[in-house]
Length: 257
Image (cartoon, rainbow, N blue to C red; front, top):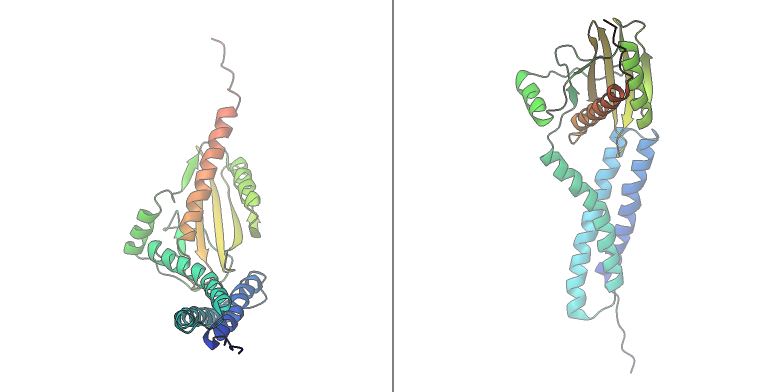
């Protein structure tokens, strides 16, 4: 006598939902990074993908329990559904943890009294004393730098570091004299495809040049602390670059007595 072994419907549907959720979560990221879909559409599609992924995981767990007791087929389908769902929910959980661990800082500047201006349109943000204090405490290295280097040469160093990072240029004005000021404006695309603008001002003075930097989100989506981290990382690289320049600079000849 032939015994008919059934395939769990829970496992079948779990795999279907999981197989739909995975490309629905990945493709919008690629489209968003290439400016093909708007940020609003991206968030909406990702919300649907995460809901499907959560449903796939829940149905897979139910399928595992039922398969254990009934002996039906479908272990492979349920396992695939669980994998697909976790591949979607894992990054979302990671970004959720970042949102809690790194408070949102949509506009970080080393000079809040006179921040370098942006060229992109963003809604005005009011940064009060408490917010400024929080940002300065969270990113202690996000401070303007003063270097004993003439403004035109300092601007070239800053521009070189910007070019090395592959940021998208928007505006560039180099200082013409050692007492002039220049500025670079670039746009950075985050991993999820959101845009953030970076503005770097190089102002000349009698004793060298001062570098002020600003990084601001161009959307209301949380930045996960990325603006402040970007400013700190860039300025630390700039410190190292200037240190090497000053170390390798030929010593000025001493006058004979």
